[in-house]
Image (cartoon, rainbow, N blue to C red; front, side, top):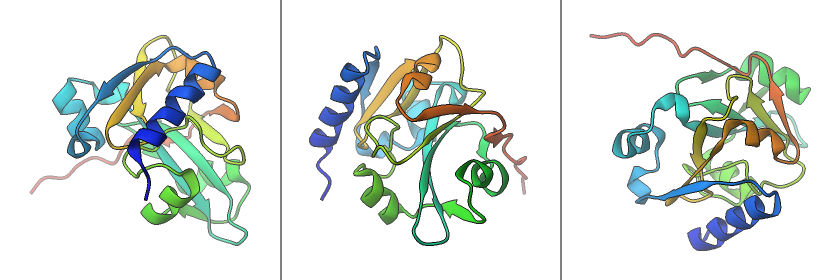
Length: 171
């Protein structure tokens, strides 16, 4: 069982060790999903970043943590696959995500991930604006300046990591 307080303490320590200034919002677990969080706390989707774990299909499995704006769509089949150097990859399952990251699904963050997991940041996430990410649990969100994400060890900015989401259809 993953203990939220332990995860949150690890994340805060990681940020302190990296000397990255941050803000935090404590939320209820039912407010952790991106759309709900943005609505409840008045955060624009373009200021919210999702951390998505992607896994290679073949054993031994390799992983990448991909950071994309909430209003974009991760390009798993082309850009992520190429960056990982694998033939096929897909989104890691909820169980796999929690086992590999030691974090709760819905709160996964790039802060304090295992060293062997590269962190890929979409090139749209840039500048001095505060971006909101999971805090490792479903009870904490962390806000840091977009440019500070590039200071995370093992992180690199990738052009075209995400694209526009498909248009929604009505009716």
